[in-house]
Length: 238
Ligand SMILES: Nc1ncnc2c1ncn2[C@@H]1O[C@H](COP(=O)(O)OP(=O)(O)OP(=O)(O)O)[C@@H](O)[C@H]1O
Ligand SMILES: [Mg+2]
Image 1 (cartoon, rainbow, N blue to C red):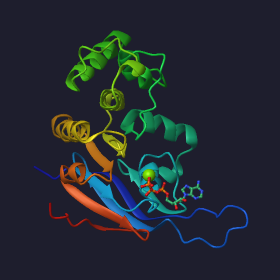
Image 2 (image 1 turned 135 degrees about the vertical axis):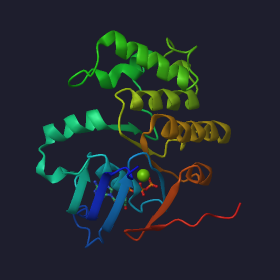
Image 3 (image 1 turned 180 degrees about the vertical axis):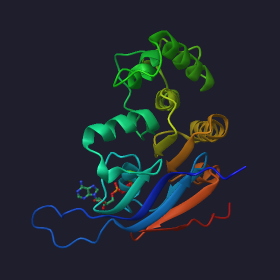
């Protein structure tokens, strides 16, 4: 069988922010990043605080545009698209999990998972989406918590709701920025295993930004961002 094609390609991507008023010249955060992600791959990105990991993830997720260079999703150059077209593609193809889960406090776990289905064109009837949301919550171990609100869930449980929500529209690409950042060790390991399993089971391409070596080790590939460039991440001896 042929190798799966690239889902995401970055070609010589740079990102430069202007210094706040009065600041001097700042070096670019991303100084020419090239990267190819194949469908079904899993990738960990590590690097010191402030090295540009979130900036890079936001560019991968079409939430931000590079200063120069090209980003291709499914072979399509994103620079050619306006904000509305970009938002439609993002909603259909990409799921996000953030460090702080951003769940709606007044909604139940089930309603939170369904939020991304409310924007844009529905891909399936509401009843089907409801069933899928329930199945996803069961898959992340929260089948008994469908009617709980975020305030009634633990940190790890909330983060698992966020994972289910990110998967509701069957994204091809799942981007997670420090998904275990606010969790204790046991909850982190549980979430890390879950993400790795979902990558294998659902064939979703996974990019995880993390400080956790345990989470990074569960991804097939590891890269380190430093001084604006990506290099292979050498595993730390345990
Ligand atoms: N809107 C902005 N304007 C100016 N500078 C910015 C802006 N956003 C980010 N930066 C700068 O870009 C650099 C990289 O930020 P980024 O959030 O990508 O780092 P990070 O690697 O995700 O760090 P952390 O591990 O702490 O989350 C930082 O030095 C930050 O000050
Ligand atoms: Mg960050």
